[in-house]
Image 1 (cartoon, one colour):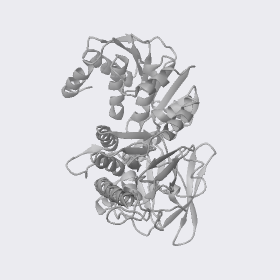
Image 2 (image 1 turned 180 degrees about the horizontal axis):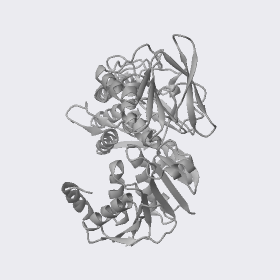
Image 3 (image 1 turned 120 degrees about the horizontal axis):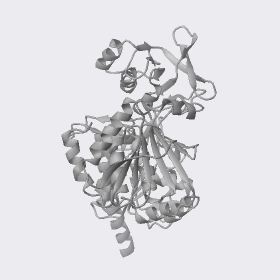
Image 4 (image 1 turned 45 degrees about the vertical axis):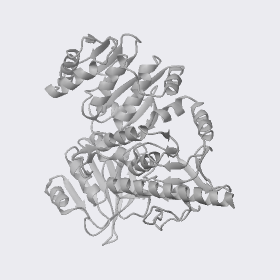
Length: 527
């Protein structure tokens, strides 16, 4: 299953093992079980510290593989074959189970180790989901640290009966002790906030105790990362306040237009950005969502977060990015994650052999339709305009596929369902005014982006009619000392390379602002 180059790389990684690791086989008589058995044998052949044994859990999903630490007795489990995006999760599980240090802050490791009670996590994933590995790896690390924590990755495409029984309509979907725990990407920090009742209070208290920064970057996407790096290189105290590091990159699969990098994936680029930021003296504060920004009497700027804590800084760079635009029709929120989805790469495999709809006829919508057509039985594209807005090459590809229908002049008016999952949608023919319905199991919304500026509305920072932060060529906003960059602003194009450039511009402008403020303060004191 593994090619020679991959085996050579793995052999090098596995030299970091310090204690024995057992691969426990829970197999059946099917082809997938035989594939998994081959993978396990190939892994065991790469290190004398890795062995294969028969699993003794009769209730285990089959095929699945346990990764057991002989030293700690912990076991991580993969139900399915952890290739694709999850192969990294498997490699890390081997290393962490074999005594290789886990790259977490020591206080986080201690917090996980101190958790009491039994925690049985299951994460339903698809191998094409780029967000799923982050969740799988976070829970695997917790399980490798604390024997009371158990985690199993479940490939939803392979265990369709479990998907139906649990009503899983989006990935990653996490269950704790049989009950729904979370849906979508969730960080280790946020997991701890949910299972450790005192975690959030401690993190908010720690935030309140932060010193006043010279530059505070709000947002951890490409614009925020570039801002932080440029600020830190100037030798000034820099903080990054972000709900999650990576921003929209974490929801982006293929990237082929990032100059000098011919091809990469969003999560990989996000990890590289975070590593680059951490090379500098930057205080990264993850897991916080900004709720308010205001200036104080002493001239500093205060950014509050949900939960009540706040951080102060002499200057602020807003780089909160954007998110998928919603349809805002009845049923959308009720069936979000129950058939209404926004990431075709992540959730598409859950609709194998079913009919789905894509809302939006731009590049993202038609690309989604083409991808889904290779998985699902049928795809219907609904476009509000009288014509598609996607590039002609994409339109030709979509029209050439036998299982894609395109409906223009279609205004989606309602998501229909049975209370548990989507069963269809209703739309209005804008030419005739007639209301029509189609039966679908999934609805993929691809209608653009909306800026993350809710916390600024009604405040001191001027916003455009579309809710974007208004900036000039230097990244300055209407509020002195506050700058902005990236997709959250009025820049005309939303591209990674443009966001990074605007982040650098905003950071250099903030540094210039601080220098001038210092000169003015010195002159005032001298007078």
